[in-house]
Length: 487
Length: 107
Image (tube, rainbow over all chains, first blue to last red; front, top):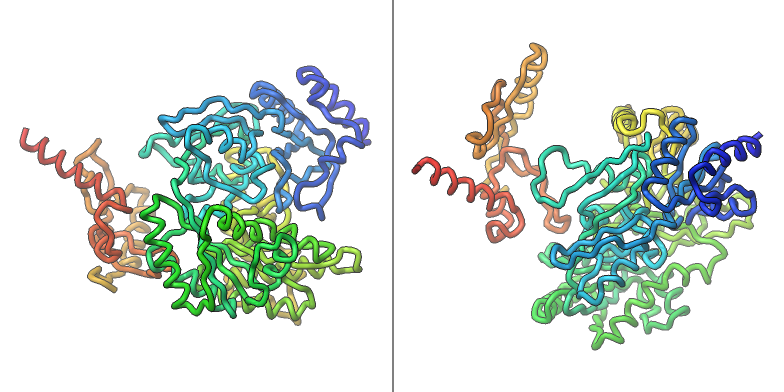
């Protein structure tokens, strides 16, 4: 049945899309069945790769008319299943729209198509002494359209903000095929500020077809200091102490012992393998500013109980310090058949307590957890090490992940820092938000997409889904965390 | 905390708004009133929020401060010990508006 529907629909799209923009063969469709969260897979009816805004509009008009769900997709690097296809829908890939349309060095902005890779923007403006600040670890591959959909972060968002803070304007094709634009280039524009609503809306309010990004001057100087600790608690407390000192580093990253060992075995960055935790703190700016601040950071680290501080002597050593952190995920991949990356955010002051809680949960479930994360902004990325070949281990891993996120909520945090909700965290959304709030989310969505055709089933759980989730999590006749308000 | 008065009139404000809502009327939310001269006159019962003041939560390590809406920016800046206008940009605008008002009234 779906094969005949597939062919019927493909024929309609062939009326305005070139042959190479339509994928309808099962073998080729398989390439699109998942994104970076490969545990979830679904084959779409079709994949469409339009080359222009007009074609995107035509696709949306036809889907609207035919009531076909649309899942938009950038580079497919989402870690929360945001681009997981819908079995009765099309995947709208923006990968062919990858032109940089305008670079304005005086206004420090660039206008780009959604398929342009994050790093390609910085590469294109490097000769002008400029760059695009948000740097998710997938920046070599991920696209700016996807960054907007997920409000992507990165190592440097502590100082420079998330995608939202580095976007000036968006051109969007709505669910009905009409174009609307949001422009915040003027600091005090009239009317509601819709940019924060659209950025991070996970493909549920419209299709981003053009992005105006802010460009920043490349800092003249960047230096790194590493703090070595014999306890994760001391390292966590030192992160809060640096910020309380009034210093905003470009980034503060933390790695615990399992992550340090895995990274050291992989890239030989000369990390202290017996340390319980290391902090890597980067400061950028002018020579004078960085020189003065790095001394203060070193003093704070020592006061916080660092057994040793190491200052990168030159650019080569700075890159060496970073090499272990940047290779941490693949390094963990070498010591475990599979790993599951969790993404939660907590107040900085709770770092030590939450890390201790994660260790307890890790022992309770008998699964190893390595921590390597954006400590400066309280964005945790516990990596749960597991083996999907072992019966039931993936399910156990997902449950442990969910328990870690619930711990984040208990400490006043949230269930996602930068990976989004997608399909992965629908259950946890039921804990984070009450029914009244979720109904408001649905109501906002209906303003943009009354037929609910854009990325249906993602990001905002239905009432039924939450009832199901809560039923699964009732243990011994009692809901976990009875202190949390449930509507 | 600091020199900012700790006065919570949330319940009172809620009662006022509920009463207006019940009668189908409109409200005019008034803070410091520094822009009240600008634009058309607003028809509605003034809801004075300037008296709703105080610091609810302040932890420098979180880079966040939670305040009641009537706090004056100058008081907040003093609390944070920041040079005026360095972070809380609207102060600069208020100053400019004050100057503008003087210029207009002198005309």
